Length: 178
Picture 1 (tube, rainbow, N blue to C red):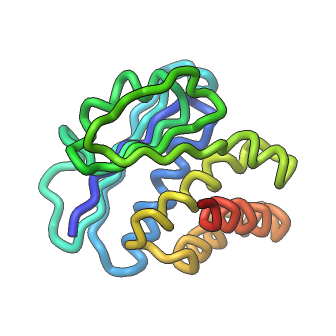
Picture 2: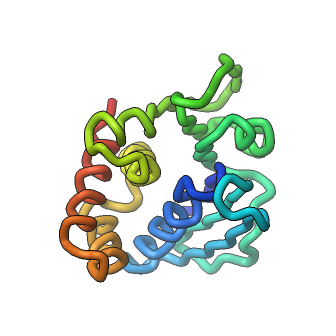
C-alpha cells in the first residue's frame, strides 16, 4: 500500500497542519510516512502545500511527481497540481472557492464545502481543514477516525478541551459527509 497525497492552498488555511495530522496518524498505526512542507514567505495568504506519502514499505523519497490524491483548498492549487494526479486518482476540492467546472477525466472528484460547513456547523472557519481531512479519511479508509482523533488530542490538548472537542466535531462532520 502506498498513498501519495498533495495538499495545497493559501497560508492560514491549515494546509500544513492537515498534512502533518495524516502523517502522524499513519506513523501511530505502524505505517511509514513522509511530510514535506512548502510555503511562500508571506505566510498567511501566500501559497502553502505539502507532500505526504504513507506506505507499508520504506519510502525512498518525499517528493511526489505523480499523486494518488490531491486535496485542493483553493483554485490555484487545482491549476498547479491537478495534472499530477494519476489516472483513477482522487481530487478533493473546496467547493466554496472553486469558481469553474473542471473536467478531470479518469479521476474521482469530491466536492467539499469545507469553509461554509465550518462556519455553519461550528461557527469557526479555522475548522475547515479538519472537515476536509475527515472526508478524506472516509474516502481512503487507511487511517481510522479514532486514530486521527488520537493525534488531534495530542496536538491540541495544550490549547484546552474546548479546542480538542471542536476539532473532533469538525472531523466527524467531514467523515459523515456523503
